[in-house]
Length: 315
Image 1: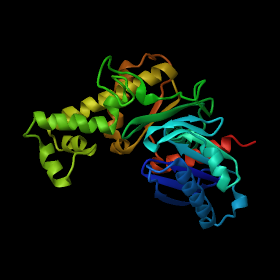
Image 2 (image 1 turned 30 degrees about the vertical axis):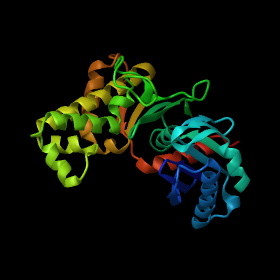
Image 3 (image 1 turned 90 degrees about the horizontal axis):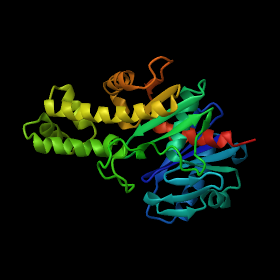
Image 4 (image 1 turned 180 degrees about the vertical axis):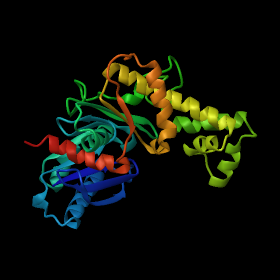
């Protein structure tokens, strides 16, 4: 048995996971991200023990703990090099966790962990896999030859910070034109606001009045009802996502490319035009094509992936 921990800016989610990736028990607590990392780690360890017992296991039954954490991660040493949203700077999270529970602890970037979970549960019969998640930012991970690709320095697979528009929109990373600045839900909301300002007669105004706020669903839902301004926002947004997908496929030619995050729940509305775009613009015209699909694990991907990442490191 293994423990998978998905550490986010809002919640700490913990799961008891068996060797097949089945979650047997879960629980979560607020992160309270303004706290020192020592306090956050103490909560993770306490919740991990609680979930273990709730799942009918003894602490001795757990072989290892995997933690998926935002930021730049030194996986070899179990250190969060930097995570601005969690105020972690050179934080030895694995070693701190072991003060509460003397057990092997493996630390992984949260997006990489989610990618590995999706891979192991849905595509483990392939040797190459790319996962892109569309959320507040654009994250993801790359699996090559069955293992996560970290780059020589542990900072690889920053999918959201590939550039798709030269000198384009500013990004929180300090660069301009990043995929994240166009294909994240944050970017979609910004694009929706701009369209609403330019089109005061758009049905999006009525939709927002009913729902109380603009969200990533606004343009998609109003486009389904035939609103022209919403349709333009949706189609342009999907084109941005497709550009990012196509670039990564051209570079890696993975067997499977999975798209996750809240927007992925739009299903074929998102997937079909992306497949059409890649079929038209992908460099590979004569060899087998990448299987582009919607991810299936959603919120469980981080827990399962963290557990599998820890599992992969065990002798």
